Amino acid sequence: MRNKFLGTGTPGYSPLRKIRTVMEGLSYAVRYDFSVAYKLVLSAIVLLLSIVLRDWMDSVFVIAATAFVLTAELLNSAIEALCDFIETEHNEKIKAIKDIAAAAVGVAIFTWFIVLGVECWEMWRAWY
Image (tube, rainbow, N blue to C red; front, top):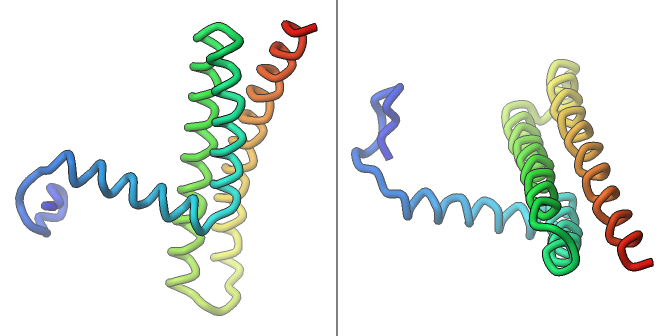
């Protein structure tokens, strides 16, 4: 695809190609990054229960929190892979970059845990 900022690549826009690229990237992340896989599975379980047992608005919060944490996790994985590609030896600057990316994931995970925890608590209270 053509890069409009750099003027490189082949011309043409294909939304189907973009969707396929997104699905390939997510598939790769789920297969090779356990932190992405377990978050996706746990969120899917809570989301399914939320849809069946609770209000649709609760489901929207679960979807938003899951998208937030998965986005942070995927960006962190990409940053780490890029850093490892650029510098294979230990480098304090690379370590700082990776630590900042990990901190972003930590913030996202904290938010995700709160949303899933509140949703699970509310479902538990509704049952009893």
